Image: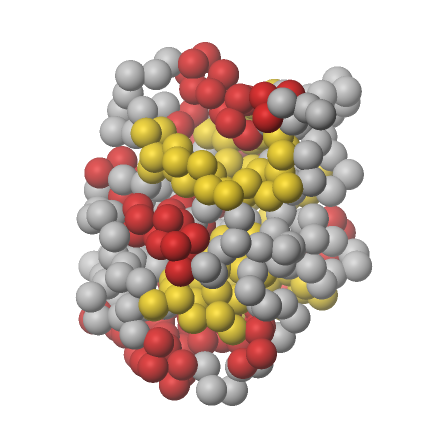
Length: 347
């Protein structure tokens, strides 16, 4: 019989079979308070789209308030978890799940509000709370001494991790650790063999210090789907062109270049103060039968992004969700969701 230390870990790819998705519901105690009705409609659309095909865990301080907005969704696939929350960005405070052998293991990393920018005391306890409520039925490993957000890493399920140096080397996350030490830690905890670091790329208005899921996503068949910018007058042009060149230089564990698929850059969207908002088509969610694509009321760009995604996910339905409300708080669809594996939910 193998010792625990001999059981290899693996971080699955998002497109592998899922058990469900976690969402954290907006409420008056979040930064959404000033536009709560508008964003609640967006969250209801997302939850209904997920529940149409697989379970969704809705974290909320008040089940009754959330439930009244989800009356038309498939109730058989909704699990409510009443827990206090600071905000709604489940991708970043939710559990990161690896497998040990074939057994799911929840990794509960620290969340400090994207480098001490926002309050996170309640959200940092949500993975632990979900386990204690019996909503997630798997062993949970306390990794809260290391700050890591789910939106900052991408896995192909075969040993490669893609991330950004701007985020993981942020001085307000794990300042005592060098790049090489962080890489060693990630390899040990997540079971990956190589870490690919993007040193270029950002989105104006992004609070996350360039999360990878806003810029470039791993996809099946050694593919990377990334945000392009071909307008030399756009403020992102130089950085995203440099990012593209770096992606072209990256290699798989077998030494092969990646297939690259370029997503369009949405036309600039600004808030009432004239600040550009971080709209991105890279912030999509892959589920078992469909891909939920954030769109921004730009029919040509929205449709082109859907067509580009279909290249990598030909057997998935590409379903568009209007995420203009979400970008007003500087995130999008992938940011508010976190997939979880089979066999750990109570339904």
